[in-house]
Image (cartoon, rainbow, N blue to C red; front, side, top):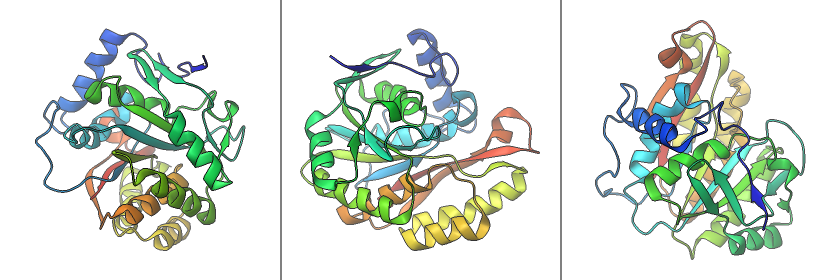
Length: 280
């Protein structure tokens, strides 16, 4: 049995379950968080997916908690597809994990092997590749949040993207939409936004990027990223999720919360931007 072991436990988040649960609880009740503990009231709209940040919990956790608070209200959720950028650039250009489980300090989450096989077989662009996931944090940091709100019964489909061009992203999104039509699933894009600029500059750039994302306009999303030089690390995963949720019936995105590492860490001179966006 192949199990993907934690790579960033003890750095991006706590390595021991009791401390990790306290940390996640603090994210929900943080002054930048939703202010309430899950579960949330039942949503009035169908939720198709999210864009959520993936930095260390002390920095981006409260912003991410806004999305997970809403996600906690979704009934009978079977599968979470988590698409993240491959920061290391190793392994296949687009890859899912060729194993049975993904481990966190809160236990093991089963990988949906059937969905993974459908994606690999139908897409022609997604490979099975352990190497692409070996050291990557962009998917891993979301799993304890999922376990916190949904337990260990929900299955996951991890997809790592080193190739983030528009054609690849749209193809991945279309294939995901095809296999998710018959499943009770959500799709999560893992991305931070502007990196290492002043807070005011980052917030201005990121507001335009969020606007394009909320319109579900993939071409405008890429044009905005390029025009403003927005250093969002997961622009490809975001585009893949935009494509998937629009095909599945989403009408728009909505910003739940924006903040920067300056808001949580205190240094406003060189920040990383974080956005929590829901697609309905």
